[in-house]
Length: 178
Image (cartoon, rainbow, N blue to C red; front, side):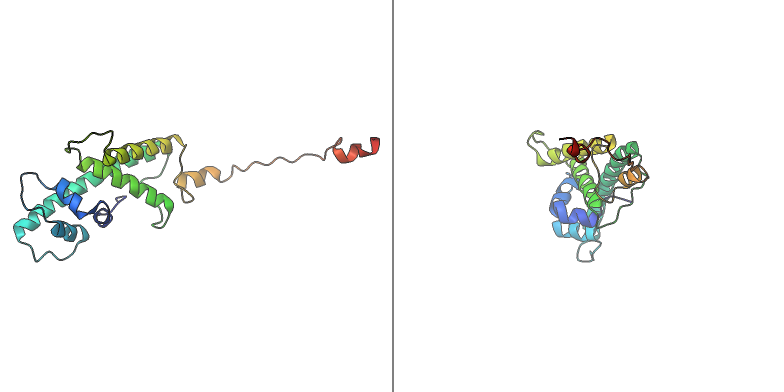
């Protein structure tokens, strides 16, 4: 199970960016509409078989990057003791966080051949931020939210309360000696 789907990647960063970074640089004919149809599983009968094959090759590169990103995320999650694959409700904040990390890592892996200044590149910044938060999660300093399986197992049965005898020399008892 992947932490991000092709349809989620088609929404953000979008089919145009994915077509540019996942297509072979030597192949011409990067078609954004074809890539969007390929990512969303829509009808591709309007394109030639050769164009569809190019889009399928780009899709395979994207799926490889997703698998590599998921393996990296799982490496951090297992350090914290999560049961893999991590199953979070689709509407939870934890699922959105992990999906965001997967998106950032996948984009970075697909954009590795880009010539930019990494200190100013938003793709590299998102990647570094995702790794930093994954590191904090592995150390136990970051939580996936209310649905975090590691946080819920850590809090069950650890509620300690102390109860003692009433105070002997409190404010109310010493009031008579004034």
